[in-house]
Image (cartoon, rainbow, N blue to C red; front, side):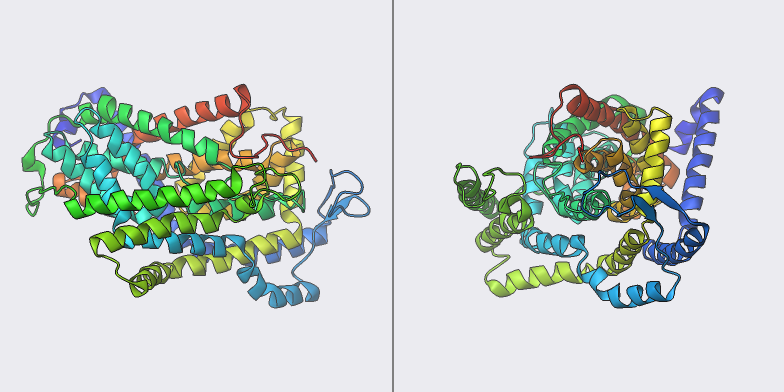
Length: 532
């Protein structure tokens, strides 16, 4: 909303706006005070080393709740802090620094999955598919298709931010609607619906790789697969698309009012939206055929009762070679159609083009690899010291004493994750810090890691829209100023706040109904409750 419109509001409306803007300014100020996530992990590593020495000196411990004979249970049933502020601790740090990094599960899984996604992205397949979905929609369904396509673009996060959000603003403008409403709808889908998707993406193995070692603090044999939240995230796509459409058309667009072209920046060019060319349509067709063939081949390995990728002993999908190798299939189902599309449209002619596409994506992962190095040390140190297990046991005891062991504990957990996300926008960074505490804690009061991870993903998504700490926030603001030259951070956040609030309420209700009312699993073979 422009300053002129703000000034026209009543006094009663101006006061909350002032308080809200001060709140946003405080969030931005506090967020800017935080060091870079990489520096933050380095600080946490040093803090754990020092705190483990202090805790060991004070004799901090907890009674092991696991039954006698359980794997990893201490002989005397007491879990004590292991000090890293000692000669033995220093030796373990020095000898484990490299293996902590190389054995960190999310590193390999994300990089392998990204190799396939990069082929689909750089060939132009993902961009063409998104454009075709949005531009081919009827005027009545355009808002829904914008949000829906934006959610699906999460498979390759840059695609949604760099391509789809500016495109959505242009499409709305060309239809005589407010361009910022289109921008907001796409931003809501890409960022607010970050965790939801119909297909497994790079975020799934990434989070599962962090959840598994956290769960193994309680159960050393526990494994969380990349598909752990697939069912819940698929149904979440429909929820977020519907809610995003409703908020756009009933709240955001009426609030923005009729667009005034005079508000645009001077350098705003005429919007020329080009549809898909005949070659691009042909490329999409053949990419779809290749995807169908690949899907049929994969189905042949898992659907029949004697499928070669089913579990060799139980014959089930859970913990089967297929589920354990899901990252490989993400690689294949994006890589092959991506190359087929590239061959048809001419963006990829041979193996060199595929290799170049993969290399470009890997070259952009430098920051992530550095982050993983320090995150891996933090996770390893936390596990070595037993601090996570002790905090989890004592925290679970506190929840039981307060009778907070029912579904309400997840509302508080999701809310906490949403608040933390305001200042620590990286999904993997936040989960690497919180998972070692909350996964064991909630396991001890009876909930499975897969369910806990699904709840985390809600909190991690809904406030992406309103935090200036989100890495693409500046890009979104730059696009917005093309249509509204005096657009500021506060105005953008105020525009997106209704999405964040409605998404939070709607997603929490869906989680409650899905998990606790209907008793449905959040993913294939994913239990709701944990039984030691």
